[in-house]
Length: 501
Image (cartoon, rainbow, N blue to C red; front, side, top):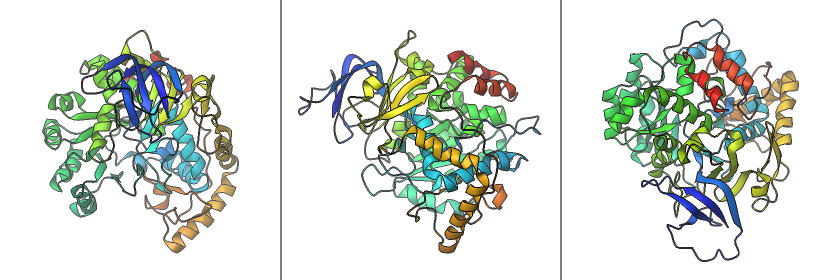
């Protein structure tokens, strides 16, 4: 247990910001009290008291991602001169398999544990404490670096969430999800991704089978209109907005102005490396850029898209609150350097150097040495750009250097890695396993189209020996901005991201 002192940005419904506040974090991973709103709790007399040196905010929640692909760079299809109109198109592009699917499959099959740690590290350096988008296959344990929303058990044996990445095309295909929703489970579903109005039928199918309820989290919704948002509001469902990926691929994004006017709960998701931001902290800046042009949201409303709004989307499914700094909530916190622009602008404009501390489930996982040393003495060093930070993977044998080394082994010998993967996939095919039954393996399988094997979820075909690009840096920098500038589909809006550095 410990006490974190500073200005507390609660993100409660009343918007309370507590100057000179303190957050009491219990050994159970929950917030025991937030003073001065709550009385000081018993039992903290000998607890370390840490001066945060910044704003204490809820940990950021990324409600849309595909983690397996986040070691890869931004992708553009050279033969494409106009934006795509549907998510059904780009998976068949000439370079998609070689540049996205095959490299990710090879890393997932031969260095799955290191790959997951790498992409979680990429998220946590941006203040993310919970993220959606587990790969198929092996499931990370609770109390890993950050929460994996798809598989998080919260100390129980319950399976709280169902996820549909590829869009179901019939009521029969959606029947298992409808049954899960009827039983109170959450349902995270991609729907209407693209600019083609015909994609609205995907959402209508969700409505027809009766899953447009509080448990539904619909991802993208770029083709939806006012009638759809009215239905979503009536069901108290949530919409996850991924503006960077939408603009990158389709040159258009969801009509969040109309969704907001309808009262739909809006959240943000950074999607994946090939068409998304480094982490949800940067997706917040994309939303800010869009908002500067359209003037729809307040700064507080933008920040709620990565804190209390996704927390509320999960609140009817998870047994503990998340996304607010309040008594009884999960102790997931991020400390951000205070900037001159004000409380909410500090988070909107923050970049990786401004993240001072990240706490997940009451455990300090990443941050400045001065803050990590008294809270996580087993933490090890990590370089984040020019910065020196500390990180705690929960295993003293695991360091940032070992994570990178394991991935570089695959990059340096993709042919050997492919041969090893063939053995693993043969075993999977022989016993019908899903990647979880190997004592010495942590196999990750794709949750996105893998056309090279003919079936996007084919578990028997091993990945080929392909060229794996260099690992992407943890921080957002000049090379990434240059790639953004070269894509014409977004009409220059995304080029404004460079101004936040």
